[in-house]
Amino acid sequence: MQLVWFRSDLRVLDNMALTEAMAQGPTIALFVACPQSWQQHDMAPVKQDLIRRRVQALQQELAGLNVPLLLVEGSTYQKIQSVFEQLLPLGIARVYSEAEYELRERRRDESLQNWLAVQGVAWWQCDRQCVFAPGSFVNGIGAMYQVYTPFKKRWLQRFAEQGVQVLAKPKPQAPVVLDLPELTPMQSGDNSSADWFVHQDEVLQQLRRFCQQQVQDYKKLRDVPALDATSRLSPYLAIGALSVRQCLARLQFEVGVDLQQSESGASVWLSELIWRDFYKHVLVAWPDLIKHQPFQAETAAIVWRNDKTLFQAWCEGNTGYPLVDAAMRQLNQTGWMHNRLRMVVASFLVKDLHIDWRWGEQYFMSRLIDGDFAANNGGWQWAASTGTDAAPYFRIFNPVTQSERFDPDGAFIRKWVPELAKLSSKQIHWPHKLPIGNTYPAAVVDHAKARQVTLELFRQARQQSDDADE
DNA sequence: AGGGCCTTGAT
DNA sequence: TCAAGGCCC
Image (cartoon, chains in turn yellow, blue, purple):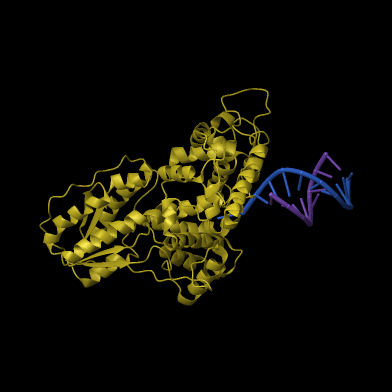
């Protein structure tokens, strides 16, 4: 008997572990919910619920292939071995999975692989989260790229040479008859992700619709948070309900040569998918990132202000900066935030409130339905100017200017900050010069002053680092 | 995937 | 006054 262990690859299509197992013989599948380990990763409840709902749908889809999926309620990664102990009497020959790159996940796999080897059970794992496997790209001096643009260039070159291979849906196997052991059945979640569908056909339909109807305007409209102009596929990529190869193949199929034109919407979306690969490759090349070390070592010397009251105002969306508050309220109420706004609120936390970027990183993980360590860490370190290919320290978003530029008529602010809904589109971006007070909070900091403080914080850290070198 | 501040030259 | 451009952080 072959056993496919599903983790962050919760799909039937383009699933190499499933395909390989079924090619070898009769196959069963396993998923173990580990809420205590998820909690240690700060995984958002809404993401946990999406996973629980998704694996229920996956169970039905696998049933169509006569592959039984065992949904087990576990606790921590350390205790997964006991689930396998109960399954081995079924005569498991080999365990198949797709590699994950975070530290605890790697340790979990390593210890399980070692234990299985002692039991005489083989281990098979594929490297398919990225389009090209981490470690397979090196620059001129034999190291992983630290800058996105040359990485992308190399990536596109390889994509042109090799294309992308999407695995077909496996053929159904003959029904398997099993005497299953007593396992704790997986619990259902809190249904907080109910606004996001979980069935394969719906996910694929959204991908198709995006590539057919929306991607051509992506370059122009993706930065406008009031519009629904982004793909909204990130939650599915994060849990592997959709693979990046499926995205690429569909994109190529729908837009054809447009993908070659660097100004097309399709190529801009492609670039976002390459960013996803980039940050996973970065994580594998510099595993200490998982311990929350800044990539640029000298930025570890920055003395953050870390004011808890200001942090709370940011978390709750009560900073007095309308676009920042609208964005945080969107996150808190839906578990998702528009990408442009992720940059705006991250810049604001770090460079206006002078709060450690790791506080923001953790808060995002604890709330995002699409939380992914590599992308989230990469994004925060970009915004904080501490990362690979980061924004320069002096790039400091003006939250009011960003608001005027990307939410010109205030539609997004009106939706999420109802106290301001009646203001004109001129007043709504900075509502503090108005005679009437309403319930909207005063601005918690002065941007112009805060900006100067940021420049000083980075100057001091750089000086300290220079002194240490002498 | 910035913005503050200054200069310049057109209104 | 103010848009445009350059320089700087």
